[in-house]
Every structure is written in C-alpha cells, then in structure tokens.
Image (cartoon, rainbow, N blue to C red; front, side, top):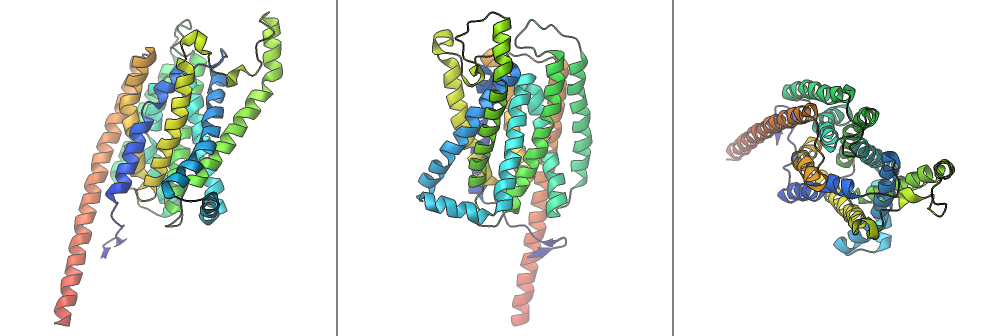
Length: 367
C-alpha cells in the first residue's frame, strides 16, 4: 500500500532486529578485551596494528566456514554468493569495513575508550545523511537537531585534549595521542554509516558476509605491511637502547607471553578476534532488513556499557569533560531513537489505515 509519501517500507522482521541486538551485545566487551591485549611493544600505535593483524586474518579464516556451517553450504556456494554480491558491493563493502575497523582500533589505543565510543555513537546521524545521499531517504527535523547537539558534545570531548595532564599514568593518554585519537575516531562513524548503507543497497537476496571476509584479508595484509615497514626502525631503536638482541623485531605481532601476565593478553586477543567476527556477522545479517540508522542505534549498547567494562578491567577513568561529552551524546541519541521509533509507528499506522481504506473501497466497488 502507498501512504502520502509514496510506497510504504516493508515491516522489519523481528528475527532481523533480534539478530542485530545479539550482535551488539556480543560486541559490547570488545573495548575491554582490547585494553587487556598487550603486545610486546611500548608503542600504542604498533599495539593497534598488531590487533588489526589478528582481527583481520581472524575474519578471513573464521567467517567463510562459519557461514558454510550455518547455511549447510559448500565452498563453491560461498564463492557463488560472493560473485552474486557484485564487485562494487564486495570490494566497496570490504574497503569501508576495513577503514572503520582500522580507525576504531587505532583510536581506541590512542585515547580514552569513552571518548571513542561517544564519537562512534554519532553513527545514526551519519547513517541518516548517507541514506539521504545514496538512497534518497528523507532526514527528519529532529535528526538535524540531534546532529547539532552531538556536534557540540563532540567539541567538549575534543576540548579535553588541550588540557595538560600527567604522562606517568599508563591508563591516561598523552595529550598528543588523545587529540590524534579523537580525530581518527571521527572516521569510524562515517565509514560505518556508509557500510550499513551499502548493506541495505545490495540486492535483496545478496549476502554481505563475503565482503566482511575480504575485509579481513585487506586489514591483515595492511597491518603486515605497517609492521614489516617498522622492522629497520625498531632494530635501530633496540640497538640504541642496548636491548637484548635476541628480542624479535616483529614484537608488535606477539602478545605478552603467559609467563608475564598469566595468559591474559593471549586470552583477550583470541576472545576479541572470535567475538568481533561473530558480532559483525550478526550485525551485517541484521542490517539487510533493519534500517541503517536503527542498526547504528542498536550499537549504542556499547557506549552505555563499554566504558564501565573498561574501568572494571583496567581501571581507566576518563576526565569529567569526556564523561560530560559522552553523556551528552548518549542522552541526545536516546532521545533521537525515541523520536525515530515514534515516527516509524505513526507511519506504520498511517500506512495500515490507508491500506484498509483501499481494501474496503475495492470491496465496495466489487459489490
């Protein structure tokens, strides 16, 4: 049936929405696990690329067999699904996911988790604007208002980077890292919004899981190049500091040995590699039927719980400016989500009434 604005969107299946919710819940401990993952390097930058390496190749290795088991399909069928997706969605989706994944991991290792998650939470707004630009969907006024308020809250987050802080606390990022991390974090919601939009714009019977698997190859290969490119510089640094020459120059790819931390780093790395692959597979499947903005809204679960889990795991306590900005974003996006749900219900009621009138009118005419 058509409403006043044109063809009514199809109802969102409960199974698709619950798939996305479960994916968001599985993703929630991700940042705490990331903080517990220590690589054999003192550099936050190279620690991030070590995590990108394992999570990238983890997706490449895990997702195809998991998909085949879930579907009861063969490798040949997986290849057919990848071809059916089309090169534009396969490569474009893989590239967009790689960009957001690398940016998120780098930002999370440079600055406060609460700051990164708050910036990530602006994703629903960017999803709306991406859907307007590429899918022709309208953007309601309350979304524009939420965008302005969230922009102000993000500015509060950025202002914290210009406050002098002590550099002797390993849980407190240096001023430069804090600022760079916030800027890198801005890439995440933009790329993720485009990724969800790509999921929605794919063919009705297309499956984006092959794009996720391909993103693992891209991310893992990129991390390998970054780390290998650092080998000569790290060797010189080791020599200048008179470190043990037997120490591996590829230490960013090696988690802290169990003898040093009881196996916490290895366990956290393995768990996050598995959980993130499964979580985004579920979110990607849900995004096929759930609106792009709603998928991003579901992911706000991580903003609400993520910083608390990080505090419980490693004692990371952001400054009051970060808490204020994050709380402002969370409150704004909660209000935006309620407004969006109300709009959806009103449109659904209007479409139902219109369809009922059309059915009644046809019946009267037939009589």
